[in-house]
Amino acid sequence: MEEVLVERPQAEVALIRLNRPEARNALSQSLRQALTAHFVALSEDDSVRCIVLTGGERVFAAGADLRAMADSSPIDILLLNNQRMWQTIAACPKPVIAAVSGFALGGGCELAMHADIIVAGEGARFGQPEIKVGIMPGAGGIQRLARTVGKFKAFRMLLTGEPIGAREAEALGLVSEVVADDQVQARALELAAQIAAMPPLAATQIKEVLLAGQDASLETALMLERKAFQLLFASADQKEGMHAFLDKRAAQFKGR
Image (cartoon, rainbow, N blue to C red; front, top):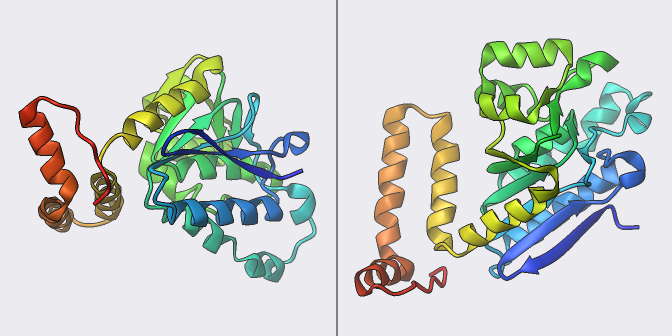
C-alpha cells in the first residue's frame, strides 16, 4: 500500500494524502521520502497552482515512527538527512494548505507548520510531545512554533508536551481557521480552488516575500516587497487582471 497518495480533485489543485492508517500516519522514513518526491514533482508541475496536504479523519499525523528510532545512535539520525526532506516542503513555491483532522503531534505538527494555511477541524489537537520520550523537536517544532505563538506559549507546549485544541491553536495564530470536523477537506479544497484561480506568479511572489521577510529587518523586507511588486508589472497576468477589472469581466490568468 502506498504511504502517500496524490489526487487531483479539481483543476489546478493537487491533494497529497498521508496513508498509513494502521500506524496513525507515523512519519516513517519511506513516507518522508515519498512525501519529498511528490512535493518536488508538484513544485515543478505548471498545471498545479495550489496543494492541499491532509491525513486521516482521526489523525493527521502522529509524529515520528518511534519503533524505528528507539535504538538509533546520533550518527544514525544524522545520516538520515531528514532536514533535506523537510526543506523540500518548506521550499515549495506553490501555496500549501494543511487540512488537519484529529491529532497533529510531534512531526505531524511540524509538518502542518510547513504549510502556508492550516484548516483544522473542531476536534483537531496540536502538540510537540517529544519531551515525554526523552528528546525534543528536531524539524522546526521549536523554532517555527516560537515564531508563530510566541516564547511563553511555545515553552508551555514544549516543556509539558501537552497538546492544545483547535480553538486555542486558532487564538494563538497556529491555525488559520476552524471548521466542523466533517468539513475540513471540503473547506481546504474550497480555499485551494479560490487560490488556484488567482494569478500564480503573484501568489508565488507573495509567498516568497512573506517568508523571506519574516527573518529580515523591516527595511529589508519592505525592499523585497517593493521589488516583487515592481517585477509583477512585467507579467501578462498583471495586464490581464487590471484590464479585466476595468472591462468588468472575469480575468483569465495564464501564469505568464
